[in-house]
Image (cartoon, rainbow, N blue to C red; front, side, top):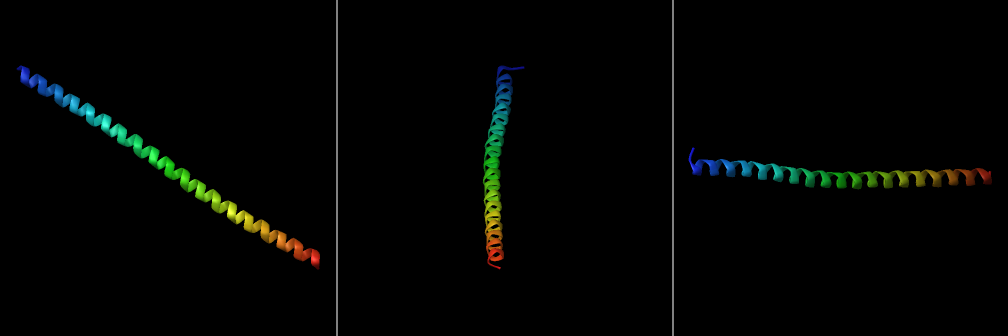
Length: 70
């Protein structure tokens, strides 16, 4: 084994480690972005549910006020 082949092996190993670190970083960034997107979607869903419930309450109020007039 010569000195050059030993250093090449070390650099290949370091290169693999760097790739693993890069893959981990990209995975973490992706997971953070996806969780943020999920939170936005959930917030939108909650807003829609709130809007529907407000409409239902308004219709119930209209029905009650109409029933009182009868």
